Length: 218
Image (spheres, rainbow, N blue to C red):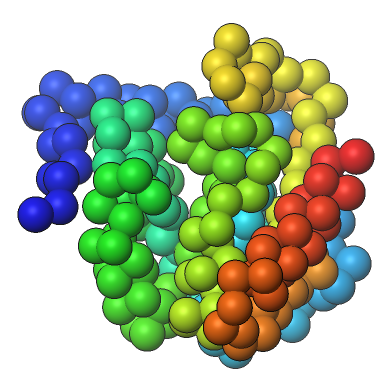
């Protein structure tokens, strides 16, 4: 039996609603500059895609999503962990206009993958932090490549640079942009994971995507 994800109480739901409101207020003050050299926003793929970005860039990418998500697309689902932290993230993202699927490689992984594949078939985009939920930081796990191959989805690497931010004392030095600061977000290139049965080929695709994300970070 898969482990059931943590369920929120009424007070936790209320706190998440307040937290989402505070984030919307913060995002409204930010100067978000989006660099889209591969024209994803003006000419997005006809089907779903996977948005991949490092865990500590969550707030910047969310702020960009609220401003520039292409019209006509089905919506974005965020893969969160089945832990209490994942519960909070899932609650807040819903109030920010996104859905959530709960699960990770250690808890409810197979169940979450089935849910993701079902949602992909319904046309939803997927957002994944491939070094989450607990790291190592900037190290891409195998789940992203597996999902991209299984669902035949292209991967859009996304990166953000903070010009003035607080850094939490967490495993990834999670970044919170300061009010009225600037955030630069870079999209692309769109990557396709070819069909492959052997682990060596999958690890190579994993390495390629990690390399692109790290090059953007550099």
